[in-house]
Each structure stands twice: as structure tokens, then as C-alpha cells.
Image (cartoon, rainbow, N blue to C red):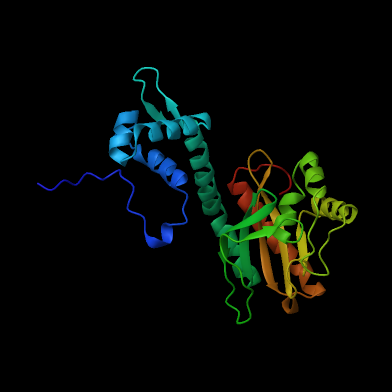
Length: 271
């Protein structure tokens, strides 16, 4: 009978993996050794399974334990995964749930606007694009899922920035704001006025502030707590968004964002 059990030993490094940090690779191998079948592992078991010395495994476990990624059980004196792993996994699950909830409204917005639409979330002082639907029009803008962009220079970013707590906004505006185009807002007082406008109007505009020739409109998505957990918006070449068309696209963006907010549990009067 063939032995079909999976090997826990780290795979031999490929030539392109030479730049990887060995300590990081080993720490990840320790975490990946735990499974439903083997939820608890001791130093000796991990040493044998991973082909690492006991002292190395002990140091790795001590470091991972200090950060909450593993913990030592009182009953068996072995190790199991800690709550930190659950917390990080929950963040990923939350983003998947967010994408699923927002997907119909993202499609609705693309169909109504006939422009490329994006869904973004806050990541530090940047916005990360976690979903998109491309326009079917010949002239399109470049973007990709996973791309990061500055909060102060993009509609998706400003729609998130405007609804942060005041203390967080103060922290952000103490930073040096980079000018990406001649139209980027970098002056804190002007940025504060823009934030106030966004809060009142419920939407943000990028008027070629991140890339010349690109205009965007975005609105926040709120969850059951009322917090802005994401933003959704339309992006298109500036030639297709003159001032007179802006007024027709804003209601579409706000309607789609409100629908997605309601799907996320928001029950406030505005979204």
C-alpha cells in the first residue's frame, strides 16, 4: 500500500527562492504543520517532521507564542495554533464576505454607468482594490485587483478617509501628502474642506488627482456598525466625464453603495 500521508518537511528550495528568509520560511512551516488531524504538536514531533533541530524549533515556537500565533496547552505541554491565526484568517474571510455582498451592486453600477468599477478597502494609509468589473468600451483605464493607491488622491481613498474618526484624520494630515499630478490636494486645510464636503455629500471625486486623464467617483460602504468598511466607485477616462455627466453618475454610485451597505447590515438613514 502506498503511503499517501502528506510530508510536513519544507520542500527543497528552488533557485528563485534563494532570497527568501530562512527563519521566516521555517516559522511558516511550523504553522503549516498543524492540521485538523494533528491540532497539537510537541517540539520533538515538529523537529522530526520538519527536519529542523530541536533548539531551532523551540526558538521558533517561543517567537510565535510571543506574538500569539501559537500557544502551549496546559494539559499536554504541547503547542497548538493561537488566536492570532484566527484573527488574520477572519480578516481574509471578512474581505471574501464583503466582496460577495458587494458583487451584485458592483455589477449594477457597471451596467448602469458602462464604465469600469472598483471595490476598495483601507490598508494602512492606502486603499487596496479588492474587486473590479471592466467597462466594455474600447477606451479603458488600467487597473488591477490588489493594486494600492493613496487615500488623499483617489476617489475610493477619499471616500474611506472622510469617514475615519477625527483623530485618525488628524494623524493622516500630519503626514506629508505626495502630489501625484498638479491637481492633487496636498494642503491640509484644503484637504479638511474636501473631507467635510465628502461627509455632507456622501461621495468623493478624483479629478485627475492621481493620474492625468483619469477621473473617478466613489462612495463609502457601511456595515451594521455604521463604519465605512469599503468604498465603491466608477473610473473612466477624463474625456468621458465632463462636468455635465458627473451629475448623472453620482446618483448611480450612491445608489449602488447604499445597496451594498444594506447587504452588509447597515440600517442608517444614509449610506
